[in-house]
Image (cartoon, rainbow, N blue to C red; front, side):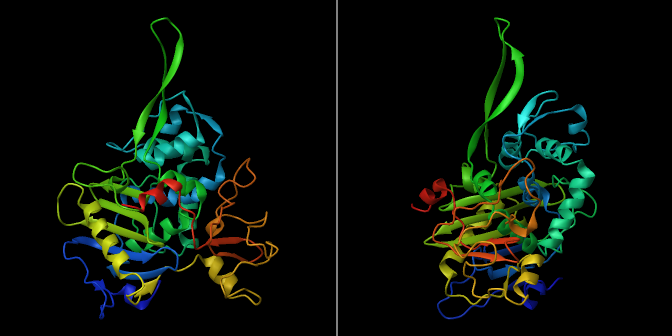
Length: 385
């Protein structure tokens, strides 16, 4: 396995530094691969086969979103052509997009995040010069993030030969995505209205009614056997025949923000991937500040290179070139991991409202790291029992 993030993360089996005062890991975790990390410091608190290359299913949509979200303003509109929906895999999850109907980019992203709609992914890919170009850009973005276990074949995560990722990579990708305001918003949305099909009512008047969609992330929306997890803020679930169940989640409690990724639990029970994630979250919040890390979530290549340059600010405090030392992003700042600038927008996915956090601007504002993300108010309320 890869050793990105530390030698121990390249070892098979469970990696954790148990010592006096550190809680024992939960026994009922059967996933083939998992990871628990501090989302802000990047410390990996514990991991199991962190770099195993496995089918990611729809958790790969996090990379799709992190790559494409900054490109289109959310108010932009697109009329769906039949070709936009071509090539969607049989049995795919769908939000219900119809040919010849017009949708905003905001609508499409709700379809991606809440319903894991492969139809929404294909329409956004068509807007991005097609599936082939989108796959190319996703692979380039994965390389920039140092998510080197990841290889994209289908942008929606549908099973495809050679399409793989790892618990480590999915956690890196989620961390990158959560630094974008729009990403955080969509990832934490429980339910929303989605435009339906244009029809004529009984009076012959043309109407287009909306229908409600709900997030398929059970730790966020809850289910009969899974309560809403205290402090949950997203991010993405997946399930295919080849991948089994996969999930990456982020949660905040008592000032700590953790990321947990679980891939393919062997135990075949309803919502098992969420139950195992919750157990690992519980352990992580108890262990945070007590357990010595076994590795780290590495920064993107551009950030690592910039920090190594003469004049870079190693302290992690605001004041890099381009921000005037004010602690706010300069106008030339780009989203995390040098994602492409928004088309027709002057800052979509760029400006972040930092609340009591640390802002680092490196290489003249070319890379933005927000180690203290302002999670949505809805999530803040969920941090209390």
